[in-house]
Amino acid sequence: MSRVRSRGLDLLFIALVALVALTLTSCSASSDSGRSGSMPSPAPSPSVDPGSGGEPTPEGGSVPEELVGRWNGGSNEQGHWYYEFQSDGSYSAWPAYEDNPTLITGTVDVTSSEITFSNAGDPFIVEWYISGGLLFMDGYSYVPA
Image (cartoon, one colour):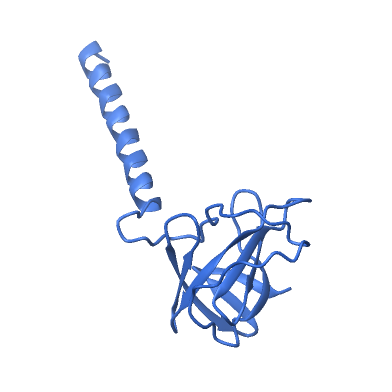
């Protein structure tokens, strides 16, 4: 194979790898709309030990009765998460994979198909529904805990 042809194939391969990387990056990041294709881990907010009884200051809307309670599941690089929703619009979340987890608190606004999570970071929106006793948020399932 000629040297010019080999160099051309090398450049084509590099361009293809860059295109794939760019495509994957743009598919996974959707900062323009505040939505994500997967359930993001909540941004940290005021830390409270889950067993301390610390209460967040609710400013969210009301939460449907079927969503109120503690749920465990989902997935990310580290493992499952707990989400606990209160009827007053407050929520708590913490990783199930840590022995002494940091509690993330904030508020939620819930519509029939979307939950907007707000805490110290930018709000983010997930699609949700309950079916067969399971909570589904952005395609991940959660069981009552």
